[in-house]
Amino acid sequence: MKGKTQAIVAAATGLVSVLGLIVWAYSDAPIGSSSNSNQKLRRAPGAVPVLGDALTINAHLDKFHDFILEIFENNGNKTFSMRIPFEPMGVIVNDPKIVEYILKTKFHVFDKGPRFQNAFHDFLGRGIFNSDGEGWKSQRKLAANIFNVKNFKDFVSDVFVNEMDNFSQVLSEHAKAGDEFDLQDLFYRFTFDSFTKIAFGVDMNTVSEKDKAPFMVAFDEVQARTAKRFLTPMWETSEYMSGQATIHARQIREIREFGKDIIRKKRANDEAGIVCSESDLLSLLMKVKDDRGQLPSDELLVDYALNFLLAGRDTTATVLTWAIYCLSQNPSCLEALHQELSALDCSSPTYEQMKSQLPYANAVFHETLRLYPSVPTNQKQANADDILPDGTIIPKGATVGWSAYAMGRTEAIWGPDAKQFRPERWLEMQKQPSPFDYPVFHAGPRVCLGKSMAELEGVFVLVQLLRQFNVQVLNGKDAKYSLSILLPMTGGLKARVSARV
Ligand code: HEM
Image (cartoon, rainbow, N blue to C red):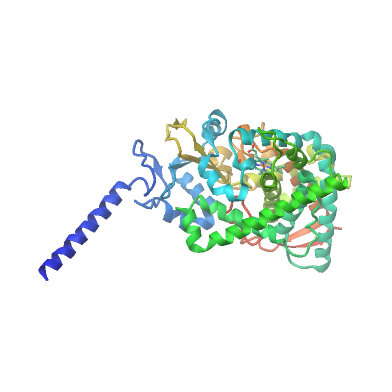
Protein backbone atom coordinates (compact mmCIF):
# COMPACT_ATOMS: atom_id res chain seq x y z
CA MET A 1 0.00 0.00 0.00
CA LYS A 2 2.83 2.33 1.10
CA GLY A 3 4.69 1.52 -2.12
CA LYS A 4 1.62 2.35 -4.19
CA THR A 5 1.19 5.74 -2.45
CA GLN A 6 4.84 6.55 -2.99
CA ALA A 7 4.48 5.70 -6.68
CA ILE A 8 1.43 7.99 -7.02
CA VAL A 9 3.25 10.84 -5.23
CA ALA A 10 6.31 10.36 -7.44
CA ALA A 11 4.17 10.32 -10.61
CA ALA A 12 2.25 13.44 -9.50
CA THR A 13 5.50 15.25 -8.63
CA GLY A 14 6.91 14.28 -12.01
CA LEU A 15 3.80 15.52 -13.80
CA VAL A 16 3.81 18.84 -11.91
CA SER A 17 7.52 19.27 -12.68
CA VAL A 18 6.97 18.59 -16.37
CA LEU A 19 4.04 21.02 -16.46
CA GLY A 20 6.14 23.57 -14.56
CA LEU A 21 8.94 23.12 -17.07
CA ILE A 22 6.54 23.59 -20.01
CA VAL A 23 5.08 26.75 -18.43
CA TRP A 24 8.60 28.07 -17.74
CA ALA A 25 9.84 27.18 -21.23
CA TYR A 26 6.81 28.78 -22.90
CA SER A 27 6.36 31.75 -20.59
CA ASP A 28 7.10 34.33 -23.28
CA ALA A 29 6.30 32.32 -26.41
CA PRO A 30 3.39 29.92 -26.87
CA ILE A 31 4.04 26.24 -27.36
CA GLY A 32 5.27 25.24 -30.80
CA SER A 33 6.48 28.76 -31.53
CA SER A 34 9.99 30.19 -31.44
CA SER A 35 10.98 32.30 -28.43
CA ASN A 36 11.74 35.95 -28.86
CA SER A 37 13.72 36.28 -25.66
CA ASN A 38 16.35 38.39 -27.44
CA GLN A 39 14.09 41.39 -26.85
CA LYS A 40 11.37 42.55 -24.49
CA LEU A 41 8.35 43.13 -26.69
CA ARG A 42 5.10 44.55 -25.42
CA ARG A 43 2.44 41.84 -25.35
CA ALA A 44 -1.30 41.96 -25.84
CA PRO A 45 -3.15 42.03 -22.50
CA GLY A 46 -4.23 38.61 -21.27
CA ALA A 47 -1.31 36.66 -22.77
CA VAL A 48 -0.62 33.47 -20.79
CA PRO A 49 2.25 30.96 -20.85
CA VAL A 50 1.92 28.02 -23.25
CA LEU A 51 -1.23 29.31 -25.02
CA GLY A 52 0.03 32.84 -25.65
CA ASP A 53 -2.83 35.06 -26.89
CA ALA A 54 -5.10 32.25 -28.14
CA LEU A 55 -7.68 32.63 -25.35
CA THR A 56 -7.82 36.43 -25.51
CA ILE A 57 -8.18 36.39 -29.29
CA ASN A 58 -10.98 33.87 -29.03
CA ALA A 59 -12.80 36.01 -26.48
CA HIS A 60 -12.65 39.06 -28.80
CA LEU A 61 -13.43 37.54 -32.21
CA ASP A 62 -16.69 39.44 -32.67
CA LYS A 63 -15.04 42.85 -32.10
CA PHE A 64 -11.53 41.95 -33.14
CA HIS A 65 -10.63 45.21 -34.91
CA ASP A 66 -11.83 47.31 -31.97
CA PHE A 67 -9.82 45.08 -29.63
CA ILE A 68 -6.63 45.87 -31.59
CA LEU A 69 -7.50 49.58 -31.59
CA GLU A 70 -8.03 49.52 -27.82
CA ILE A 71 -4.62 47.93 -27.24
CA PHE A 72 -2.94 50.69 -29.25
CA GLU A 73 -4.93 53.37 -27.41
CA ASN A 74 -3.73 51.97 -24.11
CA ASN A 75 -0.09 51.53 -25.06
CA GLY A 76 0.57 54.79 -26.95
CA ASN A 77 0.51 53.15 -30.41
CA LYS A 78 3.55 51.02 -29.71
CA THR A 79 4.30 47.81 -31.59
CA PHE A 80 3.20 44.73 -29.65
CA SER A 81 3.36 41.00 -30.16
CA MET A 82 0.37 38.74 -30.60
CA ARG A 83 1.14 35.05 -30.70
CA ILE A 84 -0.66 31.75 -30.90
CA PRO A 85 0.69 28.21 -30.48
CA PHE A 86 2.42 26.54 -33.43
CA GLU A 87 2.57 29.74 -35.44
CA PRO A 88 5.54 32.02 -36.10
CA MET A 89 6.13 35.08 -33.95
CA GLY A 90 3.80 37.92 -34.94
CA VAL A 91 3.88 41.64 -34.20
CA ILE A 92 1.30 44.34 -34.95
CA VAL A 93 2.27 47.92 -35.75
CA ASN A 94 0.30 51.17 -35.86
CA ASP A 95 2.87 53.68 -37.07
CA PRO A 96 2.66 54.93 -40.71
CA LYS A 97 6.49 55.08 -40.84
CA ILE A 98 6.71 51.37 -40.06
CA VAL A 99 3.94 50.58 -42.57
CA GLU A 100 5.99 52.45 -45.20
CA TYR A 101 9.08 50.49 -44.20
CA ILE A 102 7.30 47.14 -44.67
CA LEU A 103 5.32 47.92 -47.82
CA LYS A 104 7.87 50.03 -49.68
CA THR A 105 11.39 50.36 -48.23
CA LYS A 106 11.76 46.64 -47.44
CA PHE A 107 9.28 45.34 -50.02
CA HIS A 108 11.82 42.64 -50.97
CA VAL A 109 11.95 41.34 -47.37
CA PHE A 110 8.26 41.46 -46.42
CA ASP A 111 6.30 39.08 -48.66
CA LYS A 112 2.90 37.46 -48.48
CA GLY A 113 4.99 34.41 -47.51
CA PRO A 114 4.18 30.78 -46.70
CA ARG A 115 1.82 31.46 -43.79
CA PHE A 116 -0.54 33.58 -45.91
CA GLN A 117 -0.21 31.30 -48.92
CA ASN A 118 -0.93 28.18 -46.89
CA ALA A 119 -4.11 29.67 -45.40
CA PHE A 120 -5.36 30.95 -48.76
CA HIS A 121 -4.16 28.23 -51.10
CA ASP A 122 -7.37 26.22 -51.45
CA PHE A 123 -9.37 29.38 -52.15
CA LEU A 124 -7.07 31.61 -54.20
CA GLY A 125 -4.52 29.13 -55.59
CA ARG A 126 -1.80 30.93 -57.52
CA GLY A 127 -3.80 34.11 -58.24
CA ILE A 128 -2.46 37.64 -57.77
CA PHE A 129 -3.43 38.00 -54.08
CA ASN A 130 -1.69 34.80 -53.16
CA SER A 131 1.53 35.11 -55.17
CA ASP A 132 4.96 36.57 -54.65
CA GLY A 133 7.85 37.03 -57.06
CA GLU A 134 7.48 36.38 -60.78
CA GLY A 135 3.99 34.85 -60.53
CA TRP A 136 2.74 38.06 -58.95
CA LYS A 137 4.68 40.36 -61.29
CA SER A 138 3.30 38.91 -64.52
CA GLN A 139 -0.35 39.02 -63.35
CA ARG A 140 0.09 42.56 -62.09
CA LYS A 141 1.54 43.72 -65.40
CA LEU A 142 -1.39 42.32 -67.36
CA ALA A 143 -4.03 43.64 -65.00
CA ALA A 144 -2.48 47.10 -65.09
CA ASN A 145 -3.41 47.19 -68.79
CA ILE A 146 -7.08 46.85 -67.93
CA PHE A 147 -7.56 48.92 -64.82
CA ASN A 148 -6.21 52.18 -66.15
CA VAL A 149 -8.00 55.52 -66.33
CA LYS A 150 -8.10 55.51 -70.14
CA ASN A 151 -10.32 52.46 -70.01
CA PHE A 152 -12.74 54.05 -67.53
CA LYS A 153 -13.79 56.92 -69.61
CA ASP A 154 -15.60 54.77 -72.13
CA PHE A 155 -16.17 51.06 -71.58
CA VAL A 156 -16.13 50.87 -67.78
CA SER A 157 -18.36 53.90 -67.32
CA ASP A 158 -20.84 52.47 -69.83
CA VAL A 159 -20.99 49.21 -67.87
CA PHE A 160 -21.82 51.06 -64.65
CA VAL A 161 -24.54 53.10 -66.35
CA ASN A 162 -26.18 49.96 -67.78
CA GLU A 163 -25.88 47.96 -64.57
CA MET A 164 -27.28 50.91 -62.61
CA ASP A 165 -30.44 50.71 -64.74
CA ASN A 166 -30.96 47.09 -63.65
CA PHE A 167 -30.21 48.04 -60.04
CA SER A 168 -32.66 50.98 -60.06
CA GLN A 169 -35.33 48.72 -61.51
CA VAL A 170 -34.99 46.31 -58.57
CA LEU A 171 -35.02 49.21 -56.10
CA SER A 172 -38.16 50.64 -57.73
CA GLU A 173 -39.88 47.30 -57.17
CA HIS A 174 -38.90 47.41 -53.49
CA ALA A 175 -40.12 51.01 -53.29
CA LYS A 176 -43.50 50.01 -54.76
CA ALA A 177 -43.81 47.00 -52.43
CA GLY A 178 -42.61 49.03 -49.42
CA ASP A 179 -40.86 45.89 -48.17
CA GLU A 180 -37.76 45.38 -46.08
CA PHE A 181 -34.72 43.99 -47.95
CA ASP A 182 -30.97 43.54 -47.64
CA LEU A 183 -29.24 46.41 -49.44
CA GLN A 184 -25.77 44.97 -48.75
CA ASP A 185 -26.71 41.84 -50.71
CA LEU A 186 -27.90 43.98 -53.63
CA PHE A 187 -24.61 45.94 -53.59
CA TYR A 188 -22.72 42.63 -53.76
CA ARG A 189 -24.78 41.61 -56.78
CA PHE A 190 -24.32 44.96 -58.50
CA THR A 191 -20.52 44.92 -58.11
CA PHE A 192 -20.47 41.25 -59.15
CA ASP A 193 -22.43 41.88 -62.38
CA SER A 194 -20.36 44.96 -63.26
CA PHE A 195 -17.06 43.30 -62.51
CA THR A 196 -17.73 40.06 -64.39
CA LYS A 197 -18.63 42.13 -67.44
CA ILE A 198 -15.58 44.39 -67.20
CA ALA A 199 -12.98 41.80 -66.27
CA PHE A 200 -14.29 38.60 -67.81
CA GLY A 201 -16.53 39.75 -70.63
CA VAL A 202 -19.59 37.80 -69.41
CA ASP A 203 -23.05 39.00 -68.47
CA MET A 204 -24.37 37.48 -65.20
CA ASN A 205 -27.31 39.73 -64.24
CA THR A 206 -27.62 38.42 -60.66
CA VAL A 207 -29.11 41.72 -59.47
CA SER A 208 -32.50 40.75 -60.88
CA GLU A 209 -32.50 37.23 -59.43
CA LYS A 210 -34.77 36.44 -56.47
CA ASP A 211 -32.43 34.40 -54.28
CA LYS A 212 -28.79 34.74 -53.43
CA ALA A 213 -26.78 32.43 -55.70
CA PRO A 214 -25.26 29.43 -53.81
CA PHE A 215 -21.91 30.53 -55.20
CA MET A 216 -22.15 33.83 -53.33
CA VAL A 217 -23.08 32.12 -50.04
CA ALA A 218 -20.05 29.83 -50.44
CA PHE A 219 -17.78 32.74 -51.42
CA ASP A 220 -18.73 34.70 -48.28
CA GLU A 221 -18.43 31.76 -45.88
CA VAL A 222 -15.09 30.62 -47.27
CA GLN A 223 -13.71 34.12 -46.75
CA ALA A 224 -14.84 34.19 -43.11
CA ARG A 225 -13.30 30.77 -42.42
CA THR A 226 -10.05 31.72 -44.14
CA ALA A 227 -9.72 34.87 -41.99
CA LYS A 228 -10.13 32.79 -38.81
CA ARG A 229 -7.25 30.54 -39.89
CA PHE A 230 -4.86 33.37 -39.02
CA LEU A 231 -6.16 33.43 -35.45
CA THR A 232 -6.58 29.70 -34.78
CA PRO A 233 -3.76 27.50 -33.46
CA MET A 234 -3.29 24.49 -35.79
CA TRP A 235 -6.22 25.55 -37.93
CA GLU A 236 -6.05 22.45 -40.13
CA THR A 237 -6.61 20.15 -37.13
CA SER A 238 -9.21 22.47 -35.66
CA GLU A 239 -11.23 22.60 -38.91
CA TYR A 240 -10.99 18.82 -39.23
CA MET A 241 -12.14 18.17 -35.64
CA SER A 242 -15.06 20.61 -35.87
CA GLY A 243 -16.31 19.26 -39.20
CA GLN A 244 -15.69 22.64 -40.85
CA ALA A 245 -13.06 21.11 -43.16
CA THR A 246 -15.73 19.09 -44.97
CA ILE A 247 -18.02 22.11 -45.42
CA HIS A 248 -15.05 24.20 -46.54
CA ALA A 249 -13.95 21.64 -49.13
CA ARG A 250 -17.50 21.41 -50.51
CA GLN A 251 -17.81 25.18 -50.75
CA ILE A 252 -14.41 25.49 -52.44
CA ARG A 253 -15.61 22.94 -55.02
CA GLU A 254 -18.76 25.02 -55.58
CA ILE A 255 -16.74 28.20 -55.99
CA ARG A 256 -14.26 26.63 -58.39
CA GLU A 257 -17.07 25.06 -60.40
CA PHE A 258 -18.54 28.53 -60.73
CA GLY A 259 -15.13 29.86 -61.83
CA LYS A 260 -14.97 27.10 -64.47
CA ASP A 261 -18.41 28.13 -65.65
CA ILE A 262 -17.16 31.67 -66.24
CA ILE A 263 -14.26 30.28 -68.31
CA ARG A 264 -16.69 28.08 -70.30
CA LYS A 265 -19.05 31.04 -70.93
CA LYS A 266 -16.11 33.12 -72.02
CA ARG A 267 -14.88 30.52 -74.47
CA ALA A 268 -18.44 30.06 -75.83
CA ASN A 269 -18.79 33.86 -76.27
CA ASP A 270 -15.48 33.98 -78.09
CA GLU A 271 -16.54 31.19 -80.42
CA ALA A 272 -19.89 32.87 -81.09
CA GLY A 273 -18.12 36.19 -81.73
CA ILE A 274 -19.84 37.94 -78.77
CA VAL A 275 -17.47 40.67 -77.62
CA CYS A 276 -18.14 42.64 -74.42
CA SER A 277 -14.96 44.66 -74.66
CA GLU A 278 -11.97 44.83 -76.96
CA SER A 279 -9.66 43.26 -74.41
CA ASP A 280 -11.06 42.18 -71.08
CA LEU A 281 -8.73 40.84 -68.41
CA LEU A 282 -9.60 37.19 -68.91
CA SER A 283 -8.92 37.40 -72.66
CA LEU A 284 -5.48 38.77 -71.88
CA LEU A 285 -4.74 36.17 -69.22
CA MET A 286 -5.86 33.35 -71.54
CA LYS A 287 -3.16 34.30 -74.05
CA VAL A 288 -0.18 34.35 -71.67
CA LYS A 289 2.20 31.42 -72.22
CA ASP A 290 4.43 30.09 -69.45
CA ASP A 291 8.21 29.39 -69.64
CA ARG A 292 7.51 26.18 -71.58
CA GLY A 293 5.32 27.96 -74.10
CA GLN A 294 2.11 26.47 -72.60
CA LEU A 295 -1.15 28.41 -72.39
CA PRO A 296 -2.70 28.53 -68.87
CA SER A 297 -4.81 25.53 -67.83
CA ASP A 298 -8.46 26.06 -66.88
CA GLU A 299 -7.46 25.47 -63.22
CA LEU A 300 -5.01 28.36 -63.36
CA LEU A 301 -7.53 30.58 -65.15
CA VAL A 302 -10.01 29.84 -62.35
CA ASP A 303 -7.36 30.97 -59.82
CA TYR A 304 -6.92 34.20 -61.75
CA ALA A 305 -10.66 34.79 -62.07
CA LEU A 306 -11.46 34.17 -58.39
CA ASN A 307 -8.70 36.48 -57.17
CA PHE A 308 -9.87 39.32 -59.35
CA LEU A 309 -13.46 38.69 -58.39
CA LEU A 310 -12.57 39.01 -54.72
CA ALA A 311 -10.68 42.22 -55.46
CA GLY A 312 -13.32 43.78 -57.64
CA ARG A 313 -16.64 42.69 -56.18
CA ASP A 314 -16.55 42.53 -52.42
CA THR A 315 -14.35 45.50 -51.59
CA THR A 316 -16.56 48.08 -53.30
CA ALA A 317 -19.83 46.52 -52.11
CA THR A 318 -18.56 46.67 -48.52
CA VAL A 319 -17.73 50.37 -48.65
CA LEU A 320 -21.11 51.16 -50.24
CA THR A 321 -22.88 49.35 -47.39
CA TRP A 322 -21.01 51.29 -44.70
CA ALA A 323 -21.42 54.59 -46.59
CA ILE A 324 -25.23 54.26 -46.54
CA TYR A 325 -25.03 53.26 -42.88
CA CYS A 326 -22.78 56.23 -41.94
CA LEU A 327 -25.04 58.67 -43.80
CA SER A 328 -28.09 57.27 -42.05
CA GLN A 329 -26.41 57.89 -38.68
CA ASN A 330 -25.30 61.42 -39.66
CA PRO A 331 -28.33 63.19 -41.21
CA SER A 332 -26.48 66.52 -41.60
CA CYS A 333 -23.92 64.79 -43.86
CA LEU A 334 -26.73 63.24 -45.91
CA GLU A 335 -28.26 66.69 -46.22
CA ALA A 336 -24.92 68.17 -47.38
CA LEU A 337 -24.61 65.42 -49.98
CA HIS A 338 -28.14 66.08 -51.28
CA GLN A 339 -27.26 69.78 -51.58
CA GLU A 340 -24.35 68.86 -53.84
CA LEU A 341 -26.43 66.40 -55.88
CA SER A 342 -29.20 68.92 -56.50
CA ALA A 343 -26.74 70.96 -58.61
CA LEU A 344 -26.13 68.07 -61.03
CA ASP A 345 -27.99 68.67 -64.27
CA CYS A 346 -27.47 65.35 -66.07
CA SER A 347 -29.06 61.93 -65.78
CA SER A 348 -25.71 60.10 -65.36
CA PRO A 349 -22.56 61.98 -64.31
CA THR A 350 -19.50 61.37 -66.50
CA TYR A 351 -16.04 60.48 -65.20
CA GLU A 352 -15.00 64.14 -65.43
CA GLN A 353 -18.13 65.35 -63.62
CA MET A 354 -17.60 62.84 -60.84
CA LYS A 355 -14.07 64.11 -60.35
CA SER A 356 -14.80 67.84 -60.58
CA GLN A 357 -18.40 68.42 -59.52
CA LEU A 358 -18.86 65.95 -56.66
CA PRO A 359 -16.21 66.73 -54.02
CA TYR A 360 -18.53 66.00 -51.11
CA ALA A 361 -19.61 62.61 -52.55
CA ASN A 362 -15.93 61.69 -53.01
CA ALA A 363 -15.27 62.80 -49.42
CA VAL A 364 -18.11 60.58 -48.14
CA PHE A 365 -16.54 57.63 -49.98
CA HIS A 366 -13.10 58.17 -48.41
CA GLU A 367 -14.42 59.06 -44.96
CA THR A 368 -16.34 55.77 -44.96
CA LEU A 369 -13.22 53.84 -45.97
CA ARG A 370 -11.21 55.56 -43.25
CA LEU A 371 -13.61 54.31 -40.55
CA TYR A 372 -14.67 51.08 -42.24
CA PRO A 373 -11.78 49.97 -44.50
CA SER A 374 -12.88 47.14 -46.79
CA VAL A 375 -9.65 45.27 -45.97
CA PRO A 376 -9.45 45.94 -42.22
CA THR A 377 -6.20 44.13 -41.36
CA ASN A 378 -3.30 42.72 -43.28
CA GLN A 379 0.12 41.18 -42.73
CA LYS A 380 3.45 40.32 -44.34
CA GLN A 381 5.97 37.62 -43.51
CA ALA A 382 9.72 38.33 -43.32
CA ASN A 383 11.86 36.24 -45.69
CA ALA A 384 15.02 37.39 -43.85
CA ASP A 385 15.99 38.77 -40.42
CA ASP A 386 15.24 42.47 -40.12
CA ILE A 387 14.82 45.32 -37.64
CA LEU A 388 11.83 47.68 -37.83
CA PRO A 389 12.41 51.45 -37.57
CA ASP A 390 11.28 51.38 -33.90
CA GLY A 391 13.95 48.79 -33.05
CA THR A 392 11.71 45.70 -33.03
CA ILE A 393 13.77 42.68 -34.04
CA ILE A 394 12.04 40.60 -36.70
CA PRO A 395 13.50 37.11 -37.18
CA LYS A 396 13.09 35.42 -40.56
CA GLY A 397 9.62 33.82 -40.74
CA ALA A 398 7.97 36.27 -38.31
CA THR A 399 4.86 38.14 -39.44
CA VAL A 400 4.24 41.87 -39.21
CA GLY A 401 0.61 42.97 -39.29
CA TRP A 402 -1.17 46.31 -39.34
CA SER A 403 -4.81 47.30 -39.02
CA ALA A 404 -6.20 49.91 -41.43
CA TYR A 405 -9.24 49.91 -39.12
CA ALA A 406 -7.18 50.90 -36.07
CA MET A 407 -5.04 53.38 -38.04
CA GLY A 408 -8.14 55.11 -39.42
CA ARG A 409 -9.34 55.75 -35.85
CA THR A 410 -5.97 56.75 -34.39
CA GLU A 411 -5.85 60.32 -33.03
CA ALA A 412 -2.09 60.60 -33.61
CA ILE A 413 -2.82 60.27 -37.36
CA TRP A 414 -6.25 61.95 -37.74
CA GLY A 415 -6.59 64.29 -34.77
CA PRO A 416 -8.93 64.30 -31.77
CA ASP A 417 -12.07 63.73 -33.88
CA ALA A 418 -10.58 60.57 -35.44
CA LYS A 419 -13.60 58.43 -34.56
CA GLN A 420 -16.16 60.86 -35.89
CA PHE A 421 -17.69 60.51 -39.37
CA ARG A 422 -16.90 63.93 -40.83
CA PRO A 423 -16.49 63.96 -44.66
CA GLU A 424 -15.66 67.68 -44.46
CA ARG A 425 -12.17 66.80 -43.21
CA TRP A 426 -11.27 65.66 -46.75
CA LEU A 427 -12.25 69.08 -48.15
CA GLU A 428 -10.30 70.95 -45.46
CA MET A 429 -7.00 69.09 -45.95
CA GLN A 430 -4.13 71.00 -47.55
CA LYS A 431 -2.90 67.77 -49.09
CA GLN A 432 -4.29 64.26 -49.23
CA PRO A 433 -2.95 61.77 -46.65
CA SER A 434 -0.10 59.53 -47.74
CA PRO A 435 -1.02 55.89 -48.54
CA PHE A 436 0.95 54.92 -45.41
CA ASP A 437 -1.21 57.11 -43.14
CA TYR A 438 -4.30 55.81 -44.91
CA PRO A 439 -3.41 52.31 -46.16
CA VAL A 440 -6.96 51.31 -47.15
CA PHE A 441 -5.82 50.67 -50.72
CA HIS A 442 -2.53 49.16 -49.55
CA ALA A 443 0.67 51.00 -50.59
CA GLY A 444 4.02 50.52 -52.31
CA PRO A 445 4.53 48.21 -55.32
CA ARG A 446 1.42 46.16 -54.43
CA VAL A 447 -0.90 49.14 -54.10
CA CYS A 448 -4.46 48.35 -55.17
CA LEU A 449 -4.77 48.26 -58.96
CA GLY A 450 -8.46 49.07 -58.88
CA LYS A 451 -8.40 52.23 -56.72
CA SER A 452 -9.59 54.58 -59.47
CA MET A 453 -12.19 52.11 -60.63
CA ALA A 454 -13.45 51.62 -57.06
CA GLU A 455 -13.71 55.39 -56.57
CA LEU A 456 -15.59 55.74 -59.83
CA GLU A 457 -17.95 52.86 -59.16
CA GLY A 458 -18.49 53.66 -55.47
CA VAL A 459 -19.25 57.33 -55.99
CA PHE A 460 -21.38 56.66 -59.08
CA VAL A 461 -23.62 54.12 -57.30
CA LEU A 462 -23.91 56.25 -54.17
CA VAL A 463 -24.85 59.33 -56.16
CA GLN A 464 -27.32 57.65 -58.50
CA LEU A 465 -28.95 55.70 -55.68
CA LEU A 466 -29.45 58.76 -53.46
CA ARG A 467 -30.69 60.92 -56.32
CA GLN A 468 -33.50 58.45 -57.03
CA PHE A 469 -34.37 56.99 -53.62
CA ASN A 470 -34.72 57.81 -49.95
CA VAL A 471 -33.15 55.00 -47.96
CA GLN A 472 -34.40 54.14 -44.51
CA VAL A 473 -31.84 51.98 -42.66
CA LEU A 474 -33.64 49.64 -40.28
CA ASN A 475 -30.75 48.07 -38.36
CA GLY A 476 -28.74 51.28 -37.91
CA LYS A 477 -28.37 51.08 -34.16
CA ASP A 478 -27.12 47.51 -34.02
CA ALA A 479 -24.94 47.39 -37.11
CA LYS A 480 -21.87 45.21 -36.49
CA TYR A 481 -19.08 43.90 -38.67
CA SER A 482 -18.25 40.21 -39.03
CA LEU A 483 -14.74 38.85 -38.81
CA SER A 484 -13.71 38.01 -42.36
CA ILE A 485 -11.03 38.92 -44.88
CA LEU A 486 -13.11 42.01 -45.61
CA LEU A 487 -15.54 43.94 -43.41
CA PRO A 488 -19.09 42.75 -44.19
CA MET A 489 -21.99 43.99 -42.08
CA THR A 490 -23.32 41.12 -39.97
CA GLY A 491 -26.74 40.03 -41.23
CA GLY A 492 -26.71 42.64 -44.03
CA LEU A 493 -28.00 46.21 -44.26
CA LYS A 494 -31.73 46.02 -43.67
CA ALA A 495 -33.46 48.83 -45.52
CA ARG A 496 -36.64 50.20 -47.03
CA VAL A 497 -36.60 52.61 -49.96
CA SER A 498 -39.04 55.13 -51.39
CA ALA A 499 -38.81 57.03 -54.67
CA ARG A 500 -37.60 60.65 -54.38
CA VAL A 501 -39.91 63.10 -56.01
C1 HEM B 1 -13.16 50.19 -52.17
C2 HEM B 1 -12.65 49.30 -52.96
C3 HEM B 1 -11.30 48.67 -52.81
C4 HEM B 1 -10.46 48.62 -51.74
C5 HEM B 1 -10.67 49.22 -50.36
C6 HEM B 1 -9.29 47.87 -52.14
C7 HEM B 1 -8.21 47.60 -51.32
C8 HEM B 1 -7.15 46.80 -51.68
C9 HEM B 1 -6.12 46.34 -50.77
C10 HEM B 1 -6.04 46.67 -49.29
C11 HEM B 1 -5.27 45.57 -51.48
C12 HEM B 1 -4.07 44.80 -50.95
C13 HEM B 1 -4.48 43.39 -50.62
C14 HEM B 1 -3.34 42.46 -50.33
O1 HEM B 1 -2.44 42.31 -51.14
O2 HEM B 1 -3.33 41.84 -49.27
C15 HEM B 1 -5.75 45.55 -52.83
C16 HEM B 1 -5.10 44.88 -53.84
C17 HEM B 1 -5.64 44.77 -55.09
N1 HEM B 1 -6.77 45.36 -55.57
FE1 HEM B 1 -8.05 46.52 -54.56
N2 HEM B 1 -9.45 47.47 -53.44
C18 HEM B 1 -10.66 47.94 -53.88
C19 HEM B 1 -11.22 47.75 -55.12
C20 HEM B 1 -10.59 47.10 -56.14
C21 HEM B 1 -11.16 46.93 -57.45
C22 HEM B 1 -12.52 47.45 -57.92
C23 HEM B 1 -10.26 46.21 -58.16
C24 HEM B 1 -10.31 45.74 -59.57
C25 HEM B 1 -10.68 46.44 -60.51
C26 HEM B 1 -9.12 45.96 -57.31
C27 HEM B 1 -8.00 45.27 -57.68
C28 HEM B 1 -6.95 44.96 -56.86
C29 HEM B 1 -5.86 44.08 -57.23
C30 HEM B 1 -5.68 43.41 -58.58
C31 HEM B 1 -5.03 43.97 -56.12
C32 HEM B 1 -3.73 43.14 -56.00
C33 HEM B 1 -2.55 44.04 -56.18
C34 HEM B 1 -1.24 43.29 -56.03
O3 HEM B 1 -1.12 42.37 -55.21
O4 HEM B 1 -0.33 43.66 -56.76
N3 HEM B 1 -9.36 46.51 -56.10
N4 HEM B 1 -6.89 46.30 -52.94
